[in-house]
Amino acid sequence: MSMLPWPERLSANIKRIAGDDIEKQVMKGCEGLSTLEEKAVWSKMAMEKLDKLVPDEITRHEIMAGCSCPCFPDEHIAELRSVYRKTKDIDELLEMMYKNPFYVKPIREGNTIYFTKMPYDSEKFKQAKTKHEKQFYYCHCEYARGAKDRISETFCYCGAGWYKNIMEGILEKQVKVTLEKSVLQGDDICQIAVHF
Image (tube, rainbow, N blue to C red; front, side, top):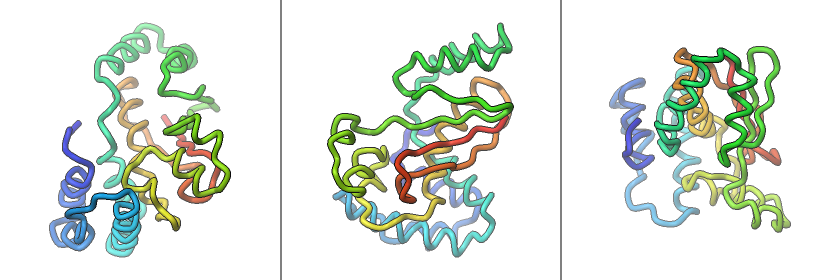
């Protein structure tokens, strides 16, 4: 996975999947953003353009899932893959994953695993009084945390892509991800479903 800054990963993914013309329109205005609020305002506009210019929801989700942050160590994925290869036991895998501080205990229902994200800043999230403060301290993305208004749920497929990449690396097969809940959509948590 690329170590490029997020806007560059998004740009490359839009070009690869939707073409140069759509990339230029969506990415317009992303240069020189410095504050969380500026980044959130730009992200909201960019997602509105992406939703309009790429009407197919599955394609939009593919674009966003492909630009998620590469912050989960490859060696940890390899370790989990090794466990899964030996046991072929999803429940044992989930128990092992739960021991890692990246995860709230995943819930499995048949061939679907529900992952709930941990807040970005747990202590400040607990102390937050308003919905906006809770969103700010829960959301992990510097391009959405400062949002005063809702950003299209298309944006959250970037975060869903983080789980997609992890699970595909472990299971060695493609999985589908769906957004179940999002603080950017007014929910109290962010929850991603991985269907395998």
